[in-house]
Length: 87
Image (tube, rainbow, N blue to C red; front, top):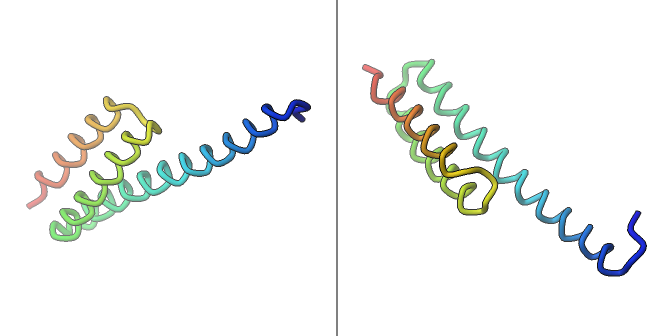
């Protein structure tokens, strides 16, 4: 447990940042899973909509500094290829 006043404040801000970062990460992962479920179900229309949402969530998480831009590029590419390969 922190003793100094500035250390106590730092703990509070870290908790806020952790909560925000976890929210970004959770929504991003859910969006990615939704795209993969739609691809598995072979529903092109639903997969395309889910892909748009997933790209938006990936970009927001990157802008917040939760994930790296390389991770974003890799996942966007991987998901887009999966959706485009559908018949």
